[in-house]
Length: 308
Image (cartoon, rainbow, N blue to C red; front, top):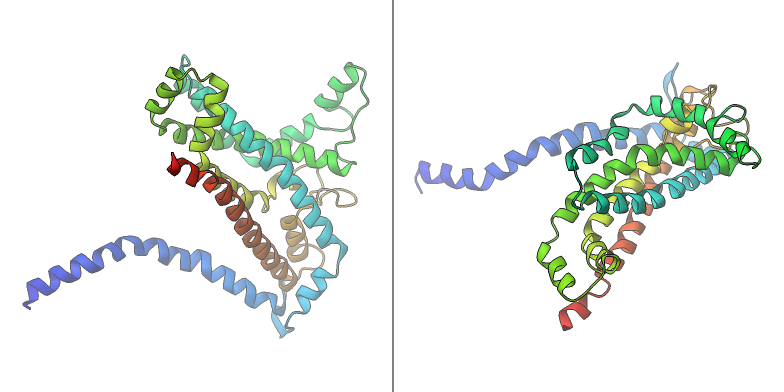
């Protein structure tokens, strides 16, 4: 084999790996290394002032798991996550379905749903904190205007979760709607035409054609929403002026608890890293569970289709 043939063979085999290598190099640098370094920090007595201290093993994990604040933060995180993610996915599919219709000024409406996404989270949080203010908020004024009692959006745990979930839905529903819209436009129009010829109504076309064809996209959106929803920080942090998650930590999330341990009065990076790793493991577990459930739903009915 001459040199030219050898170079041509190497070029064919190596070039694809060179093209994809920047991503993996960046992932190793800014993704995998911080994860492993956080695990190393979580096993040490490490703070902001003194830096690395003694090796303490799993003592930081034992401390975190022995506090009530951890379980309160875990409860709040899951509550806000469920209140935001489930309605968000449903609303995004419905909005995408409307945008996929033959509307006038399609581009205007499609760009319009993306506007909340480009608004800074802090700005959204400040605006919604005023809307959901206990004494002079817009929502409570409307409730009292129709004779209903005012709601303690900051004092009641569930009410605060609903208010924060509303912020999250405001920002992310339009973004997810555009993802679903792109998936809807990839559905072959011949399928809709065949359904119309068979006399299928609009609702049945949506339920039996559109939604099943969106299953892979729904899986993607559910998994990404899970990852983002369990790491929520900006909205609950800015929900009041103190940024502590309420007087009794009624809306403090896992990331806020992590921040409090690392940069609060305790200034313990080791304990904060332990929370980060526990949150990482929870996200991995919930992500795998979501993937298995949605994949099972997505493959349901597959053999029946092939039997036809």
